[in-house]
Length: 500
Image 1 (cartoon, helix red, strand yellow):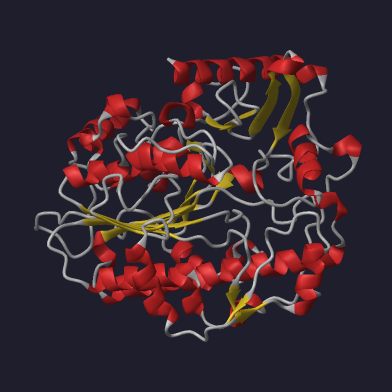
Image 2 (cartoon, rainbow, N blue to C red):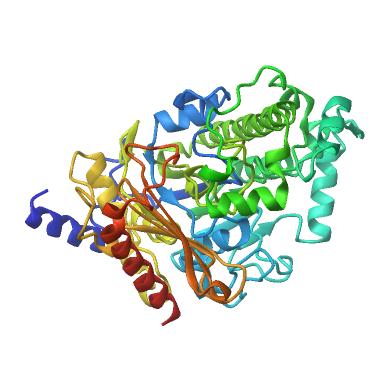
């Protein structure tokens, strides 16, 4: 793109004047845009039928067909609570303090909800925030907050949906025997008598009621589902949608000592995944896929409700997950790893008349960039409290890419600039993160730190263009030393900025 045109577009964006032509509004003042954020938990970015996976996701597929896909969005940390807090605050875990699932988010911090409320939005959250506080007392800026941490109000509403249901649920006897023989049984789920027994069903029902209301002001509706997070408890149609005997396991496996990474070794030692039989792996994969399809059905319910309410043309729809799940890849499960199936999250943006259907944006994006980018997408980028957030408003690069312009970075290699990178870390305490990852274009570097072992004790380097499954680390190749030194410098600069 011509530099002068880039500067012109950036100026228009900051003024709000570039925002957002919409069909059927020619000659009329632009109506403020609503925002519907649909969030899932542990959705592996490859588990979509439009990507050729064996799972069925027709509703997410139709959303993808109408949307721009952000192909390389990375979680701030590959566990639930801290990365959700980063999404909510546009700050890194070391800044908002919720560095792991046992920490609590400071209720005084400015949030996405507070920002949009200040711009005249009604802000509503139905579902998981995982702030580890009393969310009946601290609403984090939302005008209405409803989830299972909200006490008696949630109990009353959820019980209304349960009245529709068969009051019993049961274990599948074959599944139960397979689960009980595993070292880690946390994923063990039940066959629910009715969808009304699942928390997510209550969330989608309340969100549909909200969308059907008259709205005197623009809204931010954040629907935050649990699925496909374990335990794999599902209504029967979804629990048995995939045959545990016929699903196909991923072909790659990293359970051999000579191929394993430090992160995978810890996961295997903690959970015993290497001891699972193929029957146990297939059973878990079938039930995880059922959770993905249940999630997909609920996404369809929300998209249909938005259309029925006549709001689709004036609403930015966002789909994303907090992070992924290994889901049997390399014989591993769950999170707390830096493989792509965990750190890279699916994310779709649909804004009719603005985002190009079926388009993609392929530059690295950080978790902390999402909030300011959404603000920019609805013409509020100039209103962002820059001194209180760490993310970048990427709305204009994203839109330029959709319109055929150049991406943020043409190539990676020596000379990488920090603004063209994505980071993720995993902290168990307040010291330097145990794992830190940096991604720049097709290059991905991971380092492992342990103060008791004298600092950095292991490193991985992958060329994702040639090795998308991360099978072959290049870290032992002497030719990669200069590049890894540069990646180390990027990490050091990044971590120092968080401590400032």
